[in-house]
Length: 318
Image 1: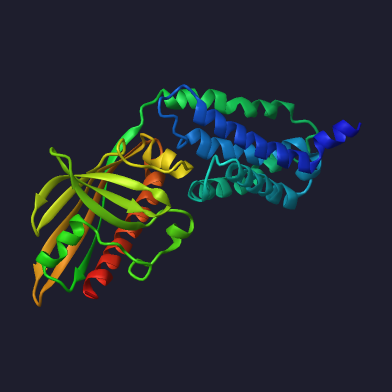
Image 2 (image 1 turned 180 degrees about the horizontal axis):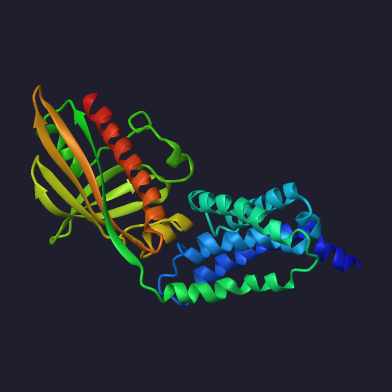
């Protein structure tokens, strides 16, 4: 009897739902259906939160009989899942934030809708088969090719220096102090900020190493260089020093996001001023490009704004 009481208790359903979410996360990450094993899938972003929201309701008649509990208890499962994912280092703050929007929206809505149909039922054995749904949907999803789309984000700023004074500082970015570079929300949740970049030549290519906080270093090859007017970089991630964190693993090491070109365009203005435009071209390949680009666009734009403003502050004080 005691075992049955634990099994049907509200809190057992919450715990089981959170552990189920972790199990699906590990399954998606280690599946062999796709070489890159990206977690940016419909199975993980849409189907999994639906099931997590259902589990406490399926397990407990007490929850089904309470509209308030049927709405709020699934949220407890989601928050517990977040904690477990963070503690086990399966996800970091940025990853959980990206997951947060679809998970929280889906969880409450589905819980209320399904509770309406299950409220008077004592047994819901048939619904337990939903726990196996990711085993079916993930291989089907991965058998369908991802859609690749090109995107571009640009930002420009006027610096009170001539192109001749500005250009060398774009090739080799000077060390940006905390006063120069104003950190924002994305830095608070763990995205590194640029520190400086150094120029090198291996006899074949000119390249620079861009140093960021938290030990991140990007290897950037100069592919075009028109002095005082234009310079283009391509990032070689195979020669870069990445962090051992979920964000770098999913975004930089995965195949669904790829940098194409990063370039600066300088336009001389009157009064020894220069308009500096920083542009980033990238490709997203997934089945959720709209949502992926929503985050990519805002993160890259925030980076461009803060970097150019930091450079402006650094150069104009000299």
